[in-house]
Length: 227
Image 1 (cartoon, rainbow, N blue to C red):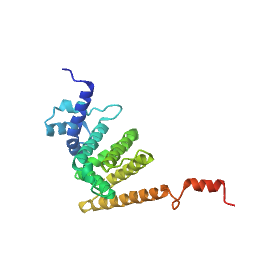
Image 2: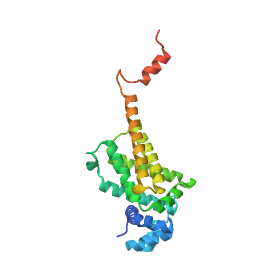
Image 3: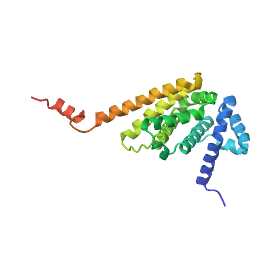
C-alpha cells in the first residue's frame, strides 16, 4: 500500500521530533549542521539518509531552521506531557506560566552552546519571519496549557508579550554563569511579575461600571464638555 502525502508528512514530523533533542546535543560540537543530524541518527539508530532527508529544509526554511523548529516542537510536546492542563489548573496563573517557562529552560539547560548557535540562526534577517512564528507558537502552547481561552484581542496580546519574554529569557540563559542559573530565574520572575501587573491594570482599565475608567465616557466629555 502506498503511503499518502499526509502520512508521509506526519512520519517526517515524528522523525524530526524524535531526533531533535539529539541534534541539539550534537549541535554543541557540530553546530546546526548535517553533521549534527548524522550524529543524532547514529545515537537514535535511525537511517542517516532518512534523517538527512527529514532535515533538508522545506518551504523556504533553511536546514538549520528546520532543526531548530523541531527542537522547539520536541520541547512543546514534552512540556504538554509533563504539565497537562489538568495539573496546572490547581495552580494560580502566575505559577502556571512560571512552571511552563521554567520547564522549557530546564529542557534546554546543559545545551547552552547549541542555544547560542540557535539564537544566532534565529536572528538572521532571512529567518526573522520563521523566528517570530516559532516564538508565537511556543507562547500559544504555554497559554493554552495554562487554560487561556481568550478569543478577542487578549489572545494576541498575551502571546505577543509571553513570546517576547520567553525570547529574552533564552538570551539570558545562553550566557548565564550563575549557580543553578539564579540570574535567569530572577530575570524570569521579574518579567512574569510584569505580565501580572499588566494584566491586572488592563482588566481594571477595561472593567465596566461607574467606578472604573471609561474610554467612551471620556470621549463623550471631550466632545460635549459639561456646562
